[in-house]
Image (cartoon, rainbow, N blue to C red; front, top):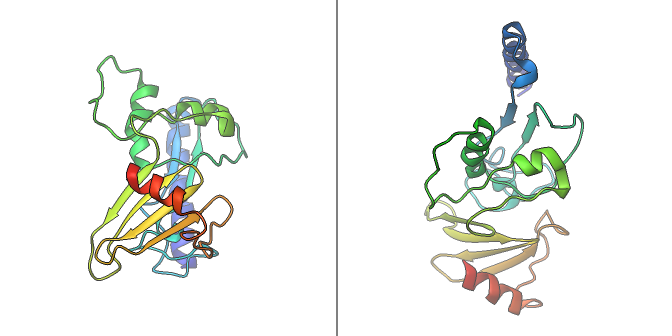
Length: 187
């Protein structure tokens, strides 16, 4: 693990050096991210990891450096990787329109304004479907601070306030059944 981290660090350093040599570092965005949660679990303090839809399988590192982005800041606005295409399109100032049925929205406002920024998407929230049967097949919606999980075969549902309970220890399905019904209708 340590060797892999060292390789990533060295590789990123080499990329930055190559961009510096072109004289374009001040005109370049460097984005460091991952495809999904780390490991099969545990994943630090988060529940779950790869191959499931708990926060440990969904939350990923996402680090950005570039023009207009204040160094050393943290932003807690939920984003998704499907926001990258609209973001890059926005920064490229392309004259061509993107397809209307994309799920994502540009992160430019969030990059430049941090927690005061907003992402405008055609649909609010995130919906994930994981119909895999070697793990629990789930459908999930994250909308605002809440996340509803529904087991595809059994119909069992779990509701979490992931802003307050990012470890997903307190299933609120019985206490906040109305909120769960609202989220299920949107999903």
